Image (cartoon, rainbow, N blue to C red; front, top):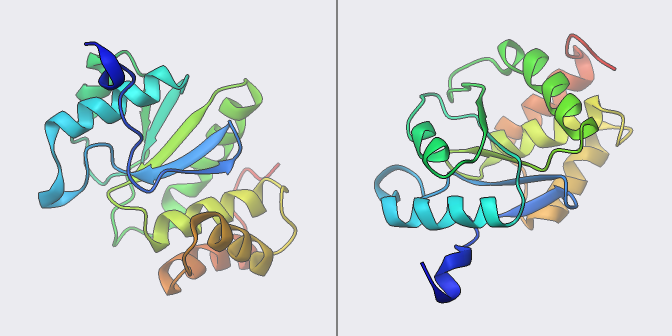
Length: 170
């Protein structure tokens, strides 16, 4: 591959949650009927060329995880379907994110689309990890980073972290 395409293209709705450490986006290649194999390839190449050391998929299924292997990008899978209670995943996800970041990894976390649930998961992580002090602050920060309001599904996830906590807290 030559020219500008050799470096790939950034995933849609890509944004840094923690600059040069932790980012979010929609699923590389797009979601549902919009998913394109060529676009997925270009976006995975971009992630690799930007030095991402791991992609963390929160998709309900293992679809397309093989594509990361094909391009030499390590991945982790924490299935979180839209109907799944986040309390079943967050106690494993948050400590693992903290560990990888402490080891200097550069991470991309994605779901099918960059929606309220992913926003809530990332706001909850910032709160859980002690980087932010309150639920409202975490919500506001994520809304500013992503340039959109967080809806009830995301706010509920932040509420879980605030009210009930998540096991394995720091």
